[in-house]
Image (cartoon, rainbow, N blue to C red):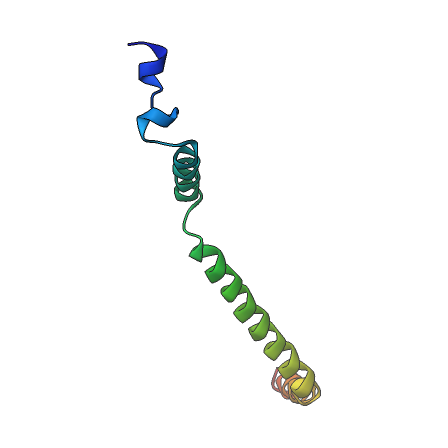
Length: 82
């Protein structure tokens, strides 16, 4: 088999253009890198995690003093019982 026969897809007479080869290569690369929707899902999970963290920080800020007083009373009671 000659070089021209083995590479006939590259020339215009073989029916496969260079664009077809590039697109095939791009599709193979995309399959290897994974599903592009996975990146969007990771971003969504990151946003949800940030929202949960913000709510936790806000709750601790709002109720922190009340909890501190409660824990101090519990510590005093535990100290008396101990």
